[in-house]
Length: 115
Image (tube, rainbow, N blue to C red; front, side, top):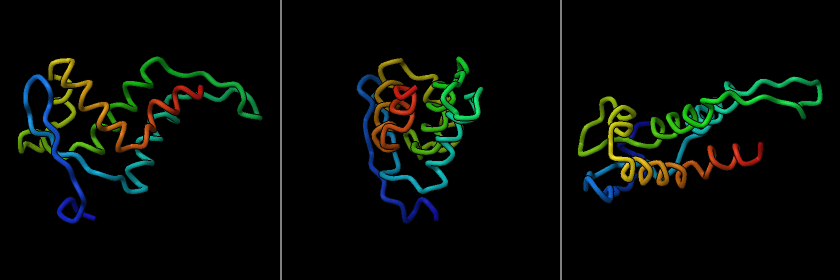
């Protein structure tokens, strides 16, 4: 599937007034990429999987995967999206991250809250 057939939406960041194009929904593969960020940063210690350890950078990795899988462009630029988002003012970063969380169905935040 390519982005030309994908439903997208344009948001504007509150401080920098940047136009950010986001996917409106995820494919199964994109959702899996984000979920893998959680699983790759978790160590299970028992056979019944009730005991586990979470790595400290887990949230950052899941947020990065969410941004990479949801954001299509920033002011028309499509290269180095993650770096561009991380270099924004914190208010704009948080705004974009929140929009990504809406698209992902809260994957990152909800999975972490369950732990």
